[in-house]
Length: 602
Ligand SMILES: O=C(O)c1ccc(O)c(O)c1
Ligand SMILES: [Mg+2]
Image (cartoon, rainbow, N blue to C red):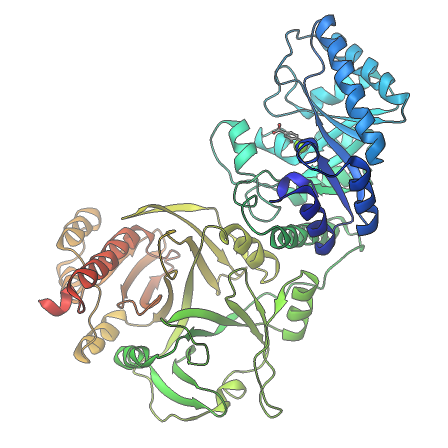
């Protein structure tokens, strides 16, 4: 772990690395310079914590300069070699010159690196030369390797950093042409696919492996096939991770490395460090809403046509269902306003899913259960939202613990998707959590316009696409992140009509939306009239059509009813701005006028 990834002072960072299970660190020059502890004290602390100091970094701007400047560079280097001796580490990272280089000449660069290496050799120090993506004359790892070959010193090798290579689109396959023992160090970082200045991208937007768009499994495969046997180190410059609690970020980073090592072990057919096979979810078992008083939600579910299936035998928990859509209302937690606090997934082997989650460092959740009740296996996601696994038929299993319900649902449904919003500091960790612990795949990041700006959104889904979790970034001002449950039905128009008849107020859709819909799709008159009269939304893609509507929000939750016609594969994203604006309209009106919705006014 590079200490630059974490928040706080050097001593805290080292404690956090050790407690997360790292066995070595790259110490950042800036972290040491700002520390009150001497290099000897840091060395002792690392020894006691069981951390090796695998590298000291970075040293900058050595090669491609005139002789006077180079002489000063050697003087600077000697001072850092002194510090390394006191720290007890023998490897230093040298970044390709991005600041002072004036002479573009590989022979000169090789000569200067060679002379630096000779100076280092007198102290038993090795140098790992890294091509920065924004280096002045050397910005490609293949170029750095050519210079290292030309210098031809035993204590001079390369440092490979996935960010510099993949951000520039350089083919990592040529890594296999470098002998493994000349790769002195490996730094791993993921990143979102952005089109921006590469230095800014690197310094602010790197992510832990599994959180971005880089193919790190493929990358690491090339490095291992080259014969590299040194540490796998994370070097992630990211403003969010520098602001979150240091122990938590270290644990999060460790999960990322465990996951990547496992994926690569699979790809490379190595068995070392292999996790249990992932359990792919094949359905949503239930979604749970918690709050102090959930009677408004009882009413909402009743109006939508859900069946009340009863109360739990031993807990203040109620169950509503419609076909395979099971919604639990839980009044055990003393939350002031309702929140979506958990969901269950069906898998082949729940015990294995939870053992694998444990190996990935996920926090187990304990729910009070009695001997004659079904054992619940769950873990807590980054913001505490609980994820359960079930490998039984729910109808004969946990559902039978609910008693006293009689009604039959007005329709059959299924959970189509669960929309989860996350606070800014939890989002990246949530992507990794869903990918690693919950074994979902990540779709590319999208941006949805809303009244408060563009909202970052990313869909996570099971390989068979049955379980879908669109995730988005909650506005920083929201007191509770809004989340919703989308229920798929055969006939959304019929469900809407019946719900209207039972007095359910929908989110009012602006007339302008329907004008625009007609302009885009030229719908037939009947369908158009139906949509408009019932406040329904519509979308179409190459595969089919989508009809949907949203209920009003209760605390932080609302429901969506969706109908997929043909092979429609989206989530009505083009309608999200209209939904967000309608929700804002309702809450603005409520804030200003106390209660009620515009729909109730008309
Ligand atoms: O942003 C930088 O300057 C920087 C420094 C050291 C590294 O290893 C690196 O990848 C980037
Ligand atoms: Mg680096």
